[in-house]
Image: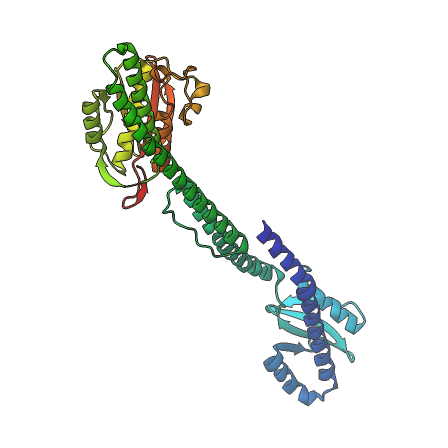
Length: 422
């Protein structure tokens, strides 16, 4: 719309300040030439007039005749000829008339007692505003469109790069920095993004180091406590000893999961993996039911260790909260993705808690007992690994009762990359 408005404004301005003045000036010049030609013809001796008529025809494309013919009047409507009629009337001091005949426009010019007719080519015109407007519109609109396209491309390409980098940034240390070039605003945006990504990566690295160090350091006193329990005298109450052993096992499991959570964003190389075979081996090893729906041969470039850890946590969570080892895995394959459903037979997860259960240390069980509520890190590890790999995980309801945790793995993932996984 802006291009059309610019073109219309340009055409109007050109017509008012250029075309109309040229039109009037040109018509005035032609009227002056016609009157001067008639005046010269009258003043010449009769024997010189034929030579003058020949010169007018050759040099100015004007035909002068002293034989006045009764020709049809020229209808109004032509801008240039209407202006020419007005200019002739001004110079002759009376109403001038234009006629049409022999493919010429004839002007009646009374001069020195003679009624002369001077013919000029009908195609003698000034610049035409319609064609000028169309030309300006076409060329101007093309120039504006191309210029706007290039400007928009120059601005949007860095924005697309920022969006792509933000979508693929998983908190890894080795992220692709955005080029800090272009307009000032985009340079500022790229610098801010690069700084933010660097700070987040350093924060996650420090968190990993801190949690890993704490988990590792706590294992030494934990091992001493195990040894102390084993060396308790035989007279100690066996129930007390079993409680102490159970508490130590829970502490060891909690430390293992904390260490696993801390290492959730370290790197793992991608591999071309045959998913059907991978899931069959997992189901056989974990003794779960696998129902595969769709093509048997499905390959994707993924981090197999990350997938293994996600499935381990989902199956463990399903068995723990489903109150039964009967866990089922169902798959759905389409052109874009593989969806893996991990189904249990428990009470399910309330809708308002399905997002919070992915937060670290959040548990549906109100008590803090590890035997009923777990550590609260299993699904947090799953969400962290899925975010790192570009997968999605959602919780729904199983039709037969229980929870349905759906893991979606895109199949069109570029190979040869290294993404966070383990």
